[in-house]
Amino acid sequence: MEACRRWTPADRAAAYRVLDHPADLWLELYGARLPQLFEHGLLALYDNLVALSGVRLTASRTVEAQGASAADALRALLAEALFLFDTEGFLAAGARVTVEAGAPITVRAVLCGEPLDRERHELLAEVKAVTYHRLQAEAHPDGSWRATVLLDV
Amino acid sequence: MDATLLRIDEYIWEIRPTGGMRVPGRIYADAALLDALGSDQSLSQVRNVAYLPGIRRYSLAMPDIHFGYGFPIGGVAAFGVDDGVVSPGGVGYDINCGVRLLATDLTRADVEGTMKRVVDQVFRDVPSGVGSHGAIQKLDRAELTRLVVRGAAWAVEHGFGHPRDLEYTEAEGALPDADPDALSDRAFQRGLDQVGTLGSGNHFLEIQVVDEIFDPVAARAFGLFEGQITLMVHCGSRGFGYQVCEDYLGVMAAATSRYGIELPDRQLACAPVTSPEAERYLAAMACAANYAWANRQMIMHLVEEALMRALSIGPRDLGLRLVYDVAHNIAKIEEHTHDGTTELLCVHRKGATRAFPPGHPELPAAYREVGQPVLIPGDMGTASFVCRGTQAAMDQTFGSTCHGAGRVLSRAAATKRSQGRSIERELAAAGVTVRSQGRKTLQEELPEAYKDVEEVVRVMDGAGISPRVARLRPLGVVKG
Image 1 (cartoon, one colour):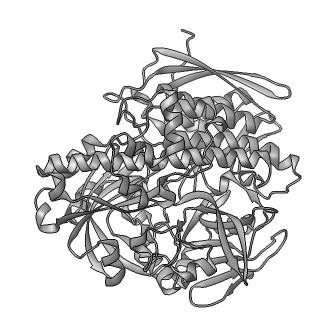
Image 2: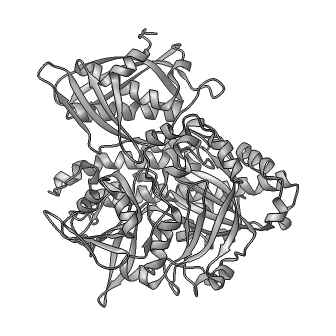
Image 3: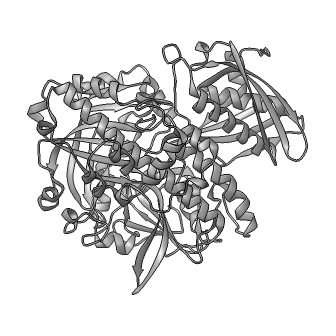
């Protein structure tokens, strides 16, 4: 297994915040660099699916996604992770992300965690989909990134 | 107040066309509900929908409108089949999310003191919660292929329900244009193990009592009487439908630019009704709609068994039968008449319920004189309503009405407001026994997170679109 570092509460605080929306989960994500923006997107997704503290890092999966823009690649990556959860029950509590710039942008993530165990894991919300609504990702002059994405719950 | 908003009458507000709007917007609301929309951006979504090519008459919003993605929730829009578009965002991810109402021969006295037992049994027998699965043996691909073509009839043919149930289901539980070739492998993968499951979020199964009849004639036709025990199921097409929407949003994004359609929001991605992209989407959407009807049919069977077990009674004592099953996230090709002209329209209902009038050929014979039953679930602490469809709905809203209470609090705000409270205990004090897979669901689904369903229903009653027939009070609730 390729090791990842477990996400900590400090990572969570730096990764994202929830914006106001009456029905769905509207997330604002931050990253010092583009790969970290993607990693933080994954953290935010899993943080809303499951109580992360209960997820052990005993297995890994690799997902890959492409997008014409950073925003599209981010959305596609989260949709891949969600598909993996819905079909295999795979939950992650850490990830390593690499990005191949170009057209399209290719992002590869090693997700570290374990398959769902209903006895042990506390599931939080059913995320139906990662939408295109107000999907944005922008780079700041210092190279850091900010993105918004809306999850249908 | 928004300067482009005109009051038409007590219950109708119009947004005058500005920018690229092809038609006005119309909102059904009273002054209080409109006020409550406040800074909510759903009105801008009503405007955005009016930009879409081939839209007829109005971009409509029901009184339970709230901010969605792309189309508002509580939105209705109809497009010409020759010059209009189909938009997966106008249906949503949970294709054919809908409501099924079951009547029983039991009265309140028959279930006195049993609610905990009943709710526990239903909770055990109907899989619910995030990623719930395993109601029946996992299907193989060939079986799922048959299921998505046959819809509710698939379940009935496999012994889950009665042929009569199909007559009392919108579209008889199957849209005819379902084509499994339009489905991705991923949709199949997500659908194999979720038939007969409730899911999570705002989906629920309720044991209710009829506590007031407003329209005795229609209530009699629907087989409802005061003090009667009813059951309501609210769920949709599960991961299967989410995947169909996901797949086709990608297809439609490309189609939007290919056909040179300009959009104010990417989530509105669409294609001309006549295009191959739209045809394939509608064929896949029909599969998902049929999946949802099979799902609710299966849940009806599971809940019947659960009730008989919990109450130690047989099918004759229970007398369970389907009152009606409606879709509230769907696009359908329907015939509509305006100013003497009849044409085929692609009607998108996203968080809106069909409300066909008396005499409509799609209604079962028993309801033809009173109109289609409209099922409007409220929040888990208050009430749900049975209303009926009218000619006014046909004339004004493409035969559509509201679908529920509509959220007012964000999930985060609801969770915050739930801190230090036991929602379960509060509901118990109000006479409602509740079981949920997740503590968080109960907090997010707090009764005050929703608009007052009484007020929403009163608007559509007052506007003459869908008059009230009966109010149903929850006694027991299973949440995912």
